Image (tube, rainbow, N blue to C red; front, side):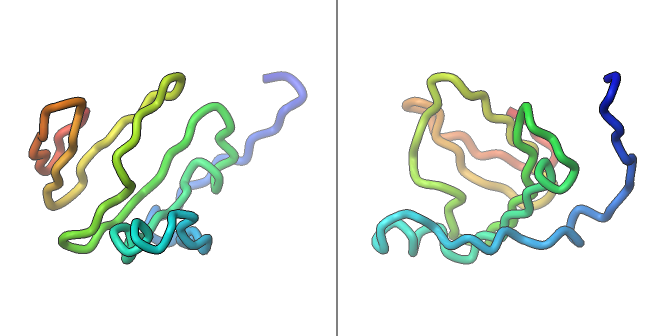
Length: 100
């Protein structure tokens, strides 16, 4: 892009500082997502058109409460472990290196 200089860099994703912001959910729901570590990789690299996050969850934790997007898309890629994802009325068990 003309007039825009991008500095290319490589970084270990786990070395990017986690987001310090606390959950804005009411306490009842905030407890369900406690322990989540979210690194906003897109912000680190200056990505503005979409978000890229590395999220680590302890066993039994939730990444977010049930929600849906009308205009945004969401992509999940499992690096390790497994998780349950609800998509409409289906509950899917996702394992290592599965993308949805």
